Image (cartoon, rainbow, N blue to C red; front, side):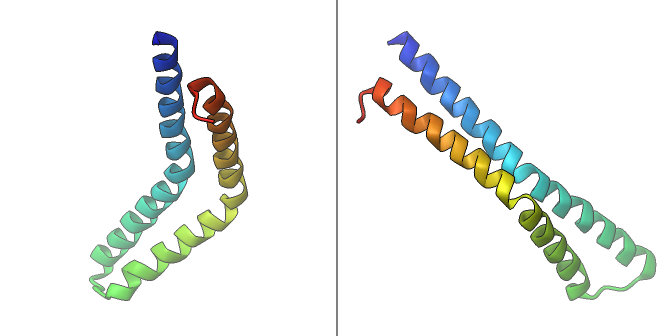
Amino acid sequence: MQALDLQVTDLVRDLLMTTIVIAGPVLLVGLVVGVAVSLFQALTSVQEQTMSLVPKMFAVMLVVLVLLIPALQLARDYTTRVLNHLVEFGLS
């Protein structure tokens, strides 16, 4: 029973790491672009709402498109590991 608990704990830890690896770059780019645009707006006194939204949106979309294939491969690998463990858990 304790070995099963360790396997479940390892799968959950792996899930969290996979989520961080997939979502981290996208969130980081959104943060950096948002801070840069906010700094630019503060320095120039331009308070246009679309100026803060559009660059962030394009930067996030670009990062998602660039990292889509590696992110899908990571998600596929994690799903394969989980499905392989189903037999050990007695769920298949």
